[in-house]
Length: 386
Ligand code: NDP
Image (cartoon, rainbow, N blue to C red; front, side):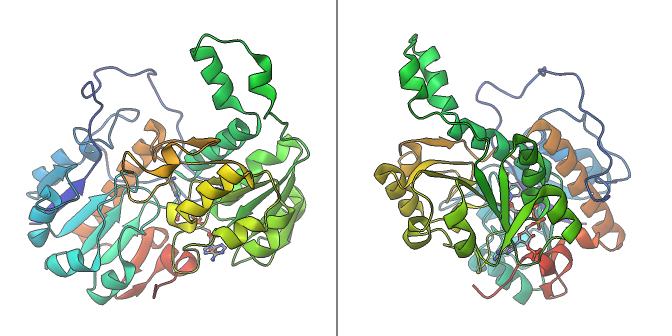
């Protein structure tokens, strides 16, 4: 029987919800391109309920305990003597979400003698040291596509919020004011702007598709080029690299995984080549940009705005400079954890566990590392050796 150690974010400050704003979720059984949404045998939760916090338990407890397994759920993941560290040495499976990542460092992986499977309940497994997972034969899997559209919606929302100066204008209302000029002195239309994405995978392409009706000029860079038909349909301009693309763009959105090729990509040097007053939207991973270079560029006016929801480390400390830098539209890491997304990644986590316990292969599209090497989706989108 297995011990499953699950690290989830805390419940709401006023307690686990007893009612919800809406009664149902739209039924989504396929993603763009045809991949099916998760297909576990069954689920023991109500889609639309809060599943990603400690009391939600990703809806896994009954399933695991009925089969004789042990489930430990905690939010206490960092610092000396954390529950995570004390429970890790005999855990067979670790589950965590990128929003509240259980960092599986080389030291922790070495300490976790029984660890065989690390599941990301979401997308993006950079909180797991993939080199160490490969060396120790740990399988890493994530729920590919479960929240890609959720994130794409957030990218569109924050792009518009920055360009149109939405958040400061909302603040004027909250503060009882009515100075129109305060609101509009930094407000523009997105129409006609050049928007580029670093990576046109599931999220990046969904962003391009959603922005096309705004009559913008669309650009992208990626390791693999999109089909010609897609480029023509959306009027895309392809660039060989981020460096080649960003000087042309008014808005740049980052939608690549964090791995050795992308870490630190947006530093002082690259940001200096962007148009003065460009906007940078990063919902991918914080360490793809240089924290202090972003703050400098906002204070100096090279960037007109920065938004996203990814920080390092997570949770971000109270004195993180991005909380107080000017012209930002940051949120905590939430874009991929809407109640809609939670229902999908909880089901996907269960599907992965059902396959694992039954000795069936995990879907190739969910695999990041398997059999001591990058595998499945991971072999396509990640690199190791960082
Ligand atoms: P995909 O795997 O579908 O897309 C990733 C894309 O990045 C692929 O097209 C890949 O290229 C491309 N890529 C990889 N390396 C580079 C590089 N060096 N330069 C340019 N492009 C590169 O993943 P998703 O779109 O679903 O997710 C992307 C990332 O977004 C995740 O890895 C995660 O970090 C983040 N994310 C954030 C969430 C949030 O809540 N904020 C939620 C979900 C994801 P190719 O495959 O062509 O080699």
